[in-house]
Image (cartoon, rainbow, N blue to C red; front, side, top):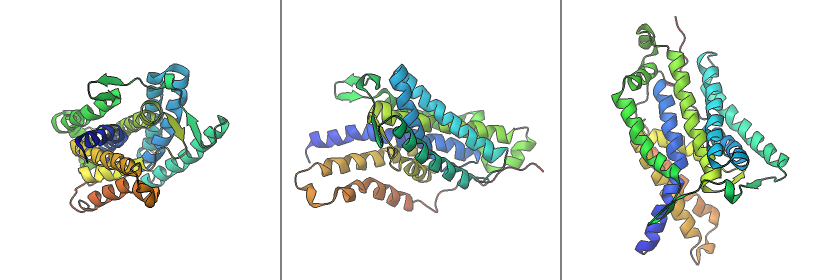
Length: 298
């Protein structure tokens, strides 16, 4: 493989790692506070759809903001159900995913484009031109955000509050912290980042919406959170690993002679590699003691 091919793969990897990184960092905030949301796949899917529609009406920035708003609403609903109403977080997340599958599939039919809807070029986010190629501005956000999140969680009072609500909500409550409110804010923020990731897919990267556009990235983001051990910087690394192998699989699929191998097997590569990496760290990661447990004040 020549250096030009390698650089091409690395460059494409930056685009592919964005949804995983943004979604995983957002989920780290929620899990640090004590809630886990397996509905990330659904948030990505719905926000990609709503973001694309809004971009066609008001431009790319409006599309991205709409995606963030969509993620915030879903994250807020998830939070209310599982904090104030003491719901089951696993079931709520599954419900979000099932709703998203039906909502987007039906929405595409309403648009008259069953299964596929292209976002016009003028409605997509304009990339930044650099000497080495064009990159989306959201890539810069995805590269900087994990470091900012790491500083926030490790160095600020608010980060300590998040950890307290996830580790010992009873002690946090005694200290005057409103546990359920903190959890609601953390998970809603996680929804905002997942919504941005979804809108990025349709408005700034792929430029279309399908009923499978999230392609398992929500679940891979959850795996990345496990790999990272709730460390946002390691989540960036996990996102890049997935992005690299996704780009590599695409490159291999387009090589002469690659038709001898079914493309579905090649497309499986990034998912298999990610799962193998996660399998190597499962059991070594320590999560908050109250993760997944609703707080009931006695």
